[in-house]
Image (cartoon, rainbow, N blue to C red; front, side):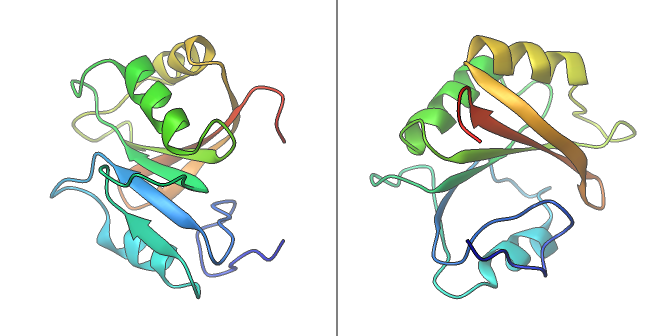
Length: 134
C-alpha cells in the first residue's frame, strides 16, 4: 500500500481513497486539508456522502456534543473497516479535548487508539481503528 510522504508524519492516507470529512468549520486547517487532497485519486467527501469511505477526517472540539456518538457515526461512514483521524485543537487552543475523553469515547465506540501527534498548527491528530484491525 503506497503512502503519501507529503502528509504530516504518521498521517498516512493511501492514494485513491474516498475520505469523508465530518465537522469542518472555519477553524479547520486548510493546509492539512489540501495535503490530504494532494494524492492522485483522493476524494474528500462531505458528511452527506452515501458511499463507503476508506477513511474519515473527524474535526472535533470540546462542546461539539457527544464524542462517542460522533465516533460511531464516523465508524458507520467507513463501514467499520477504515481509519478514523480524529482532529482536535491543541491543548492551548479553545475547544481542546482531553486525551482521557478521547480514550473513553473510543473505547465505548469499540475503537482502538493507535497514534496521537501534532498534525498541523493548532491541531492534534489521533488515529483510531476498529478493534481487531491493524
